[in-house]
Length: 168
Image (cartoon, rainbow, N blue to C red):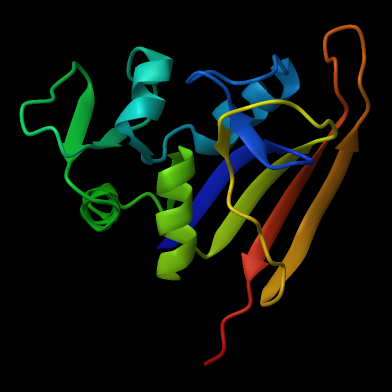
């Protein structure tokens, strides 16, 4: 089972401001949907609150310490590890950790992550939530696809996929 992170982060690693994305990039939203469809997504409660509802076409697993937290169309778990275990029960071959900042930090620190789908937004923006500093040592870049800004996208971006180099 491949455990992946999928995230869009600015050049200064900002991923959010006031519990919202700091940009509107339709090509990235399509990439997220196409990449995660049919596969479980694991996220923190604040990230879920920003969405407002479960994303269709994939199991939504929400991490929270709130014992009575329930919403239609989601599975609630108390920890990242519990979220990963729940996601494994769907037997989809890949699981996605989708945020936010604290969940990303826990995932990267845990050594659970096999793959990182990083959309690098080529801008420096203000925000209050950041992706942890990513050290590429021990990772291999397997995709690097640039998209220029245009009338629908205020910023250029690069879709990168990194795979952890595991030693046997």
